[in-house]
Length: 247
Image (cartoon, rainbow, N blue to C red; front, side, top):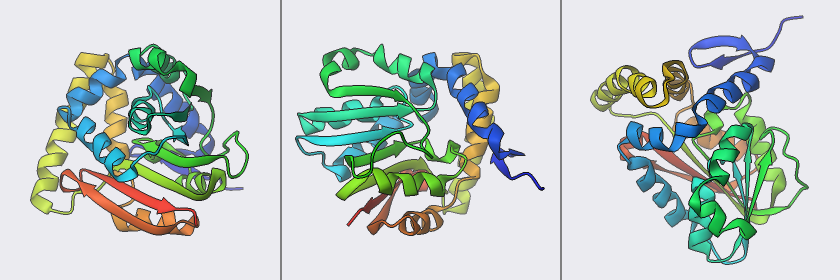
């Protein structure tokens, strides 16, 4: 029988190996992950995450599931905007969750936060459990993004909201060439200097190029059952927000 394969950056690997490899990448960079985000994006990732919150418009009392939530960046922002509520941070990599729990915000919001090691393709939660589901710069690392979206639909309550923030495809050819030069020549070097890990950041750059473009991913969101779907490009399409509702 032919083994199913998937991509790990530009490599083709057996499907069953991907989760372990991704766990290795993020376990390796966990302690320097937030510092690297600032260095790689020159701080722009903070603007993108604020734009995500602006569109999401958190409300008091909402229950958030933040998948691939890692160090808690999205959950902290959500809870600050909502004022009151609960956020469950789920990640495949325990080291990322440990780094999140060590942040100052985690101590201030301890009563509103849960940290769970788990798989986005088989969530350990009942149907109709959450008001909001977010995944930020994580879905491209998952073995089967379509299954991830189906699971998102399952655990959201009717009237619940999905929002995905992910690197995307720059439509302008000239800008894309500049972005490629920066991505492939600068980001791995930053990874070496800041996180002492060039290979993990080489993978992360390659994984962006393997992710579907904006319209294709929008179709995947619709296929999972979401309605009133839309997307917004950020910084010329370097990143993109996708939104959908469980009606």
